[in-house]
Structures are given as structure tokens and as C-alpha cells.
View 1 (cartoon, one colour):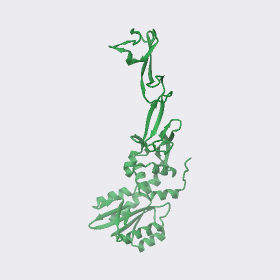
View 2 (view 1 turned 30 degrees about the vertical axis):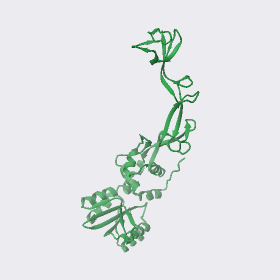
View 3 (view 1 turned 60 degrees about the vertical axis):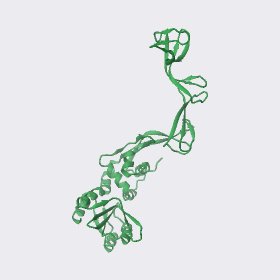
View 4 (view 1 turned 45 degrees about the vertical axis):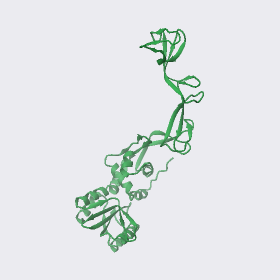
Length: 320
């Protein structure tokens, strides 16, 4: 059983990650239920993969559900290889349950009551009529002259007829051959946003996009996320990099349950000391601690605090 993490502090650590903020911001804007789609390689969460520009977002959705940000429910069970666990490329084939041969024929059987001859329907077809290949009599009435049995398989090797074939699976990845008896079944989930956390998520995850839009409206060229090369040659990541009139502004967005700690300020200072942007900014939700604010002032980092989007934007707008 999956362990659920109830500690609110652990969620605020998640909110510091850009991919989490991006996903949750997208979710609460009309995408509260995330449903997988069936693709060529199995089920996938295509909208989320495209949003985050990753090949597989399943692990992130699972992580957020552990922190109660999503409720999950089983959508389907996906076949997987019992040897390597892959469900991405599995080839299915039918075989004769008696002799294991894979050369099968499928169709409708016709039994002629008069001579007890049994064969496939197409073998009886003659010029728009049904004519028995054994006795050459024309079959007129179903139920009187003959009966028809649909969806029957015949093995071309042992010539036996059967209605349910054996099914084998071949994992393309590890070349393992297995049947339904040993196949691994993985649950595939839908994820539904936890409405009880909407206000918390709005306060912590919906800030980035409005800031980007505000910067663009004010003539900035923006990257989010972006990297800036320092004098040392190291590339440093920032949540937002904005340039205008040959001046560069870097922005870090930090959240906490009560107060953002000193490690955020120290971490930003280590970056700006090397790459020297014109204006470093911390957007802190809901606020910096007193010690953190002293460090920010010492390092000449501009700080914008607020418990929600409206408060932060009100402070940030005139500063640009």
C-alpha cells in the first residue's frame, strides 16, 4: 500500500520545484482530472508529458498523490512483462491450446445435418448459395438443413477446432515469452486534484505565470526556467531570467508553510556572486524570516513577499 505523507511542510518543499508549480497551476485552471490515454506504447499521460516536456510523468503524479495533492483511482490494468516489468512493447499472439502451433484459421463453421459434414462457411459457398462439399446438396434453411457456429478457430497443424485460443506474449525488450498465467498486471490511474488544498496551491503555485506575463507586458524578454553563465563558466539555473535595455533581472520563487529560510537567500547569493545579474529578486510566499531578510538586504537582493498572488503582484508591478 502506498504511504501517504500528511506533513504540510513536505508539500511546501514540493512547491519549490518548478515542474510541480507548473503542473499544479495548469491543473487548477480547468484540468482537475488527469486521465491516461492509450498510445502505441501503452497508457501515457500525454498532456502532462507535453506540458512538462518529459517522456513520462507517472512518477511525478505518484509523488504528488502521496502528498495528498491528488486522489487516484484505478482506470485500467496494464499488461507488463514478469521478467523486466516493461509494458512499453509487448507482442501478443494466439496459439492452439492442444499442440501449441501458431498457424490458426478463424471463421464460422457450418454443420450439414444430412451428412454430418463440418467445415468453414466459405468452403460451403458456391455462387451465392451454400452447397455441401461432401454430398453436393444445397443447404436451404438454417436450423433445418444446417447449423452455424461463429468465431471458431482451427489449428492447421492438428486440425482441431476450438473457440478460445491460447494467448502468448513476447516482451520486445528482454525477449521473454509468457502467458496470462504469469503476466504481470500494473494498475493505471486517473488523478483528481484535491479540492481541499486549492487555496494553498493557488497561493504557492500560481505566481509564476502572472509574473512572466507582467514582465512581457513591460517589454522584458523572459526565459523560464533560464540559465546564466558565471565568471567561472558554470551555468546557474533561475526560475525566471528577464532582460531589458541590456540589463538582466533574475527571479527565484520560494515558498514555505510559515517563513522562507536563510538557505534560499544564501543559495541565490552564491549564484549571483558568480554571474552578476543587474537585479536579483526573491519572491517569497508568504514571507522571509527575519534572519533571511537581513541577509537579503546585506546581499542587495530585492524581496517581494505576500501570502497570495494578488498581494505579490500589487508589490511587484510598480517595481518593474
